[in-house]
Image (cartoon, rainbow, N blue to C red; front, side, top):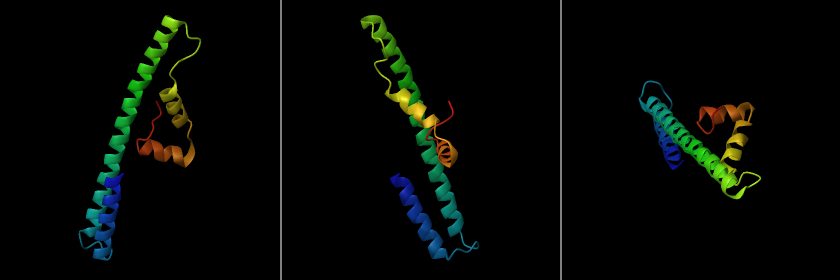
Length: 107
């Protein structure tokens, strides 16, 4: 997030110093920098989602072992699966922005 803030400041300075004309490179450099920052953030968010998928698999294995070993009547660990389910229920503009930004997906 700090990188995106820095890119936003640099982009704003580039655009302001160029007086927003398409003849100079400032507008194009600023747009390119913002695009790279958004893609970087999306990649980071998608990586976090992949870690979440592994955590859900670990939760399932631990819950299975708890049921076998102690006869637990309900799941012992549910946090990651509940968070994923909550993210999937987001609809409208917020859901669209979240999916576009890699914050959550449809799986």
